[in-house]
Image (cartoon, rainbow, N blue to C red):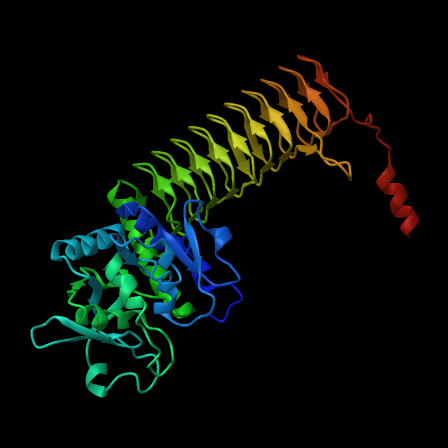
Length: 443
């Protein structure tokens, strides 16, 4: 990957690569999940708490990696081995593999795939009766003959094993190959020699077996994963106007009859309700969006929107911005760490930070909550049914009571009682003939 980040931690549609096979294993019903990590344990902090980590002391091949987890394998277990860089594998594929393996009473069953371009994959060599005989690796020159390289059926690196047979075969592996590594596929002939049956189950969809070796592969897999995410939403009743320009992460949920317009980015754990309109060029990251919400060309990060809220165009809702039912954050409005009451409108050109605004209020154009004194943040409290004038600055900490008003251009530094009008501005003074005086001085 040419990266300081471990390959399996590179993100794919909102999850690191390794989280995809983990999710598939859990969905398929795995009773225990073991991840093999290196001695630096770079993966541990990114894994769920219920995942067991085994350490491979040195990178000595796939066989050695599985052997590192031997203490977690029971003699009677069905053991499924999945590579951490094969993110498209799904629960249905793993279930089908296990069912084929257990119904045959096999010692091992490999998942194979027929590929148009099998370059880089180990080839499955079958015997005269069509049973898999061995897997020939093709990592370096000399690993495989020209005839073996012409085979299109490949080993995907995904297996089901009978636990006892696997442990016995792992103990017999050697490094008699071009790279001097312990290859996991080499357990197959040893199992056969011990009287076990080795089977192969061909994947119904070859795409689920696609591995990632570089960023080109990652982009190709992302295209497939994103298409599947889009298709699942559309089949569930969501309109995605232009899937090619739209990014939706795997954990995003969207309700029926919602319309996602072109060039939208729904990221992280965002949830969108029913009958919403997510306008073109909108980004929502880890947001909770209720039903019947309209968002127009805006950026939302960890915001929460109640039913019927209206946002944008060109609004910026920062973390912990909460709009209750029917609230509005309009054009060029920025809201951060604030609660906007039901039906309250912040129509345009305002900054609301560290504030609590009651229901049914109207915040005039160009209002600012001055929340920072250079060292600390302070909160502003605005009551219900308040009307603030244009260009009002509220210097926190300050409270504006219910039904109060502020005059346009006011700088409010003291509390405004309920129902009162707060005006804080210099009285206007007109200087007669001022323009003519200036003109004379400039001659």
